[in-house]
Amino acid sequence: MTMAGTLIETVGWLATAVFTMSFLFKDVIKLRALQIGGALLWLCYGLLIGSQPVVVANVLVVVVAVWTTVRYAAARPT
Image (cartoon, rainbow, N blue to C red; front, side, top):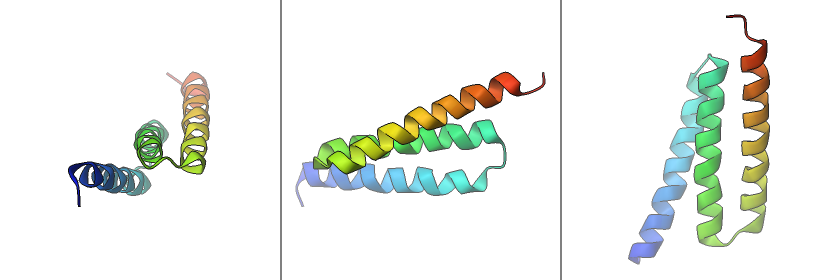
């Protein structure tokens, strides 16, 4: 495997790990932060492998996760 191939694989595995870790959090803000981080990693992975469906899906996940996080944080009692 080439150095570029190893980098691509590493990004994919890291994205998988971050996404899986998000299931361990109950706090909505922490959960969304991990979802956003995982989706950004998947977005990078999609760009590296040239997969438009992976890129578009994860752009949508980032947008929705940011939007719901902002909404939740605004409604959260202080």
